[in-house]
Length: 301
Image (cartoon, rainbow, N blue to C red; front, side, top):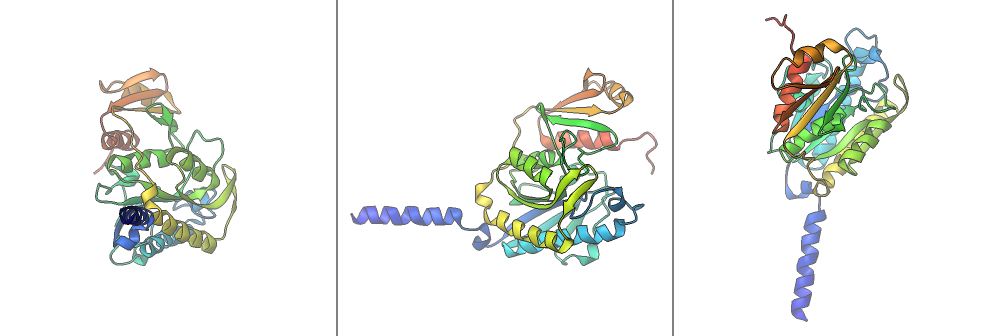
């Protein structure tokens, strides 16, 4: 009987360790990838680029949302944080507002795109200000990588959002995604792919350029809450891993890019607007996507 009690006590202890926040065990290394289309209140290009009349204000909101995520991560026990400025020109975040011990990745090109700097030493990834995929029929500013040039990006036959691509990059290093913020469309899309991760729905999509939105302060508070909750449940999540070899397909809006890329012996062209590329790893897939979407013959210097 004494042995049974001891066994029960041991099992109870192990269960409590499993369900206890990792933060209580003393330290987390957290990766934050930040986009802008999913920021609270963002609905059109007027908020998303330097020529828009609201861009400077929304740089403030984007920065505040990342700072809210950092606060939530700190509350959950994070001791090391890397932030990737992953929207537009990669120079949106107001870096003087950040804690002195946070590192920030800026500008392009980057071998791991929106996930540059991630590796197997990280415990969790967080996506802030994300948006739905180009194949999603709802979602504010829904696109994948380039709304101007691409109509579909697929991995192993499954159409992907930037969330899916970036989760697969993180997963290749054994890092799970625990939280995402954006509109209701991307939170639902992310959960369908990754499972019940924490989601901060900061606006409800009405159309490509319209939404019902929270106020920035409320959005920031929700993000902080959900980041802390996600890291508190870190033991429940698993890295999103794709089996090798990984097949990438990219559908272009126009004909010429697919035609020219098919001149490369590593590229197939299954349809007039589609190219196909295979690699053993997600970092290799990422490098190829970065090449396709950034290379120009007139690159200088």
